[in-house]
Length: 54
Image 1 (spheres, rainbow, N blue to C red):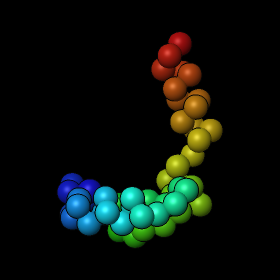
Image 2 (cartoon, one colour):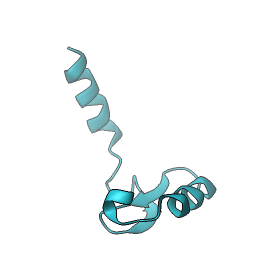
Image 3 (cartoon, rainbow, N blue to C red):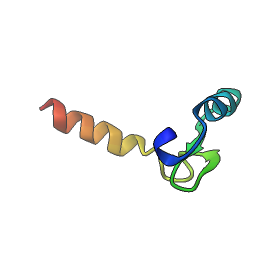
Image 4 (tube, rainbow, N blue to C red):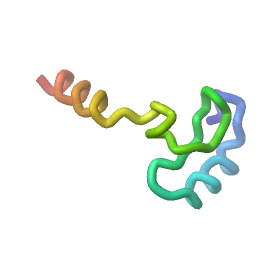
């Protein structure tokens, strides 16, 4: 967050209050559902993990 110019403590506090896939999108500097925004892609995460484990 600091690298993106945000205040870490504020972001952590607000994200901790959120539910589900709620988080801070540093690219848009907004708090939102990261899955719906395309920030979290569980399929890609799984694929990359399996590729790196091989």
